[in-house]
Length: 195
Image (cartoon, rainbow, N blue to C red):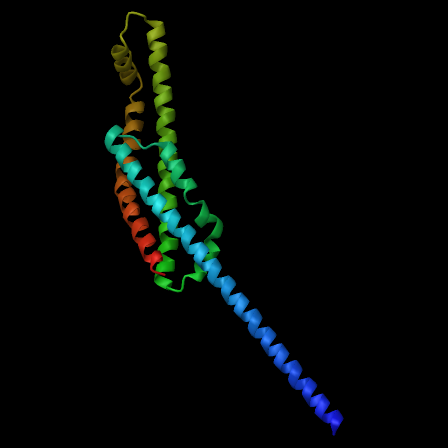
């Protein structure tokens, strides 16, 4: 009988010990998940707030200079690194609609940012070629003024004006999207702060 009581006591003790250990591990796991979620949300909110500020600067730069700054576009790309490196943690956001809105915002805006960046690189290349031709015209005929040389190049190579026009079309088509992304990123940041 004593042996049976000892065996039952050992089994009950092992069961209690296992249960307490499991509950402790579960509590540690939950605390770790909560901490990861807090850190992820904090980083994501920082990304979105910073992006909203950069979109504002991009729009201001356009208003002031009628150009899209590649430097600011690169800054915008860099501001997304936290999301790009940690997007698998989106699953920690319980609100499925918010989670999908965030993923859609980053996906669509990345496409437009890449398009703008490629467009600006092409516009810069066109401008450099045009400037080289103007410089060559000035060197070939030193009696020309810079304006006369520019006009001569425009008449000799009208594709530059057409290419500039196409670059401006892309810019003008994407500017409303930039303003929209600014509002979306600010809105998503506010919604995430409520999580």
